[in-house]
Amino acid sequence: MSEAPKHSTGREYLEALLIAALFLGFTNTFVIKTFFIPSGSMEDTLLVGDHLFVNRYIFAPRATALESALLPQRDPRRGDIVIFRSPERPTIDLVKRLVGLPGDTIQSVDKQLYVNGERVDDALYVEHKEPSLYPDRPFIDSQLRRRDNFGPIRVPEGHYFCMGDNRDRSYDSRYWGPVPQRYLKGRAFLIYWSYGGGTSDGSWRGLGSKLRELGSTAVGFATRTRWSRTFHLPR
Image 1: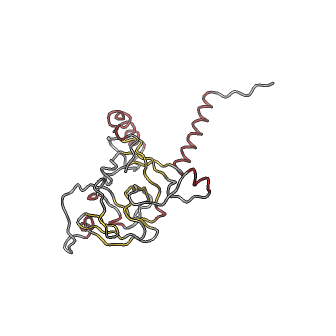
Image 2: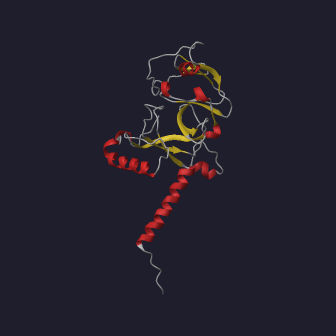
Image 3: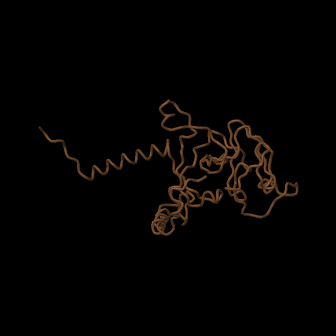
């Protein structure tokens, strides 16, 4: 009986790496996506440098009963932290808190949010880092007024109203309107790493810049990682 051909160790490692890469590519495209926080619009719920796992399947329609059983799906809910394509620049992704569902009436009065006429108790996660208050007066610039006073507006069918938890420093649905449902990419469910050093904004500035960034991260990994936020579930 002839022996089975032997593969080199190097080839076995290469095959394992290729399989792992295909698996990670599949999960990142269809099931779990990674996302990092480049700005402070969701502080203090999410910090600059937080790296997230995003459940991409939770809002997606199911083709079969098996898919529904293995990967439960539900509609977006008020309070979800969602990742979506920017209505203004669909090539970039944003992360905000969903505060309004289709058909809801949204209003803000002196920084206090109201949904369907009822005051929202959001003190557990909303931050107001600026003491200034812009009144709803014609002589105040409309962009400034909209930060603290807007509406009432009705969220159209098939859309969602999203705002940052750092309300005074968030560019969100108050300015560019509700988010179409088709733009939703998923729900943030786990911080797998939080890095307090310099964080890329995602722009490509050349190979040299990327190598310097990676080197700085490697050197500061142990001292700048926020270990207390590792595997933290954002709420």
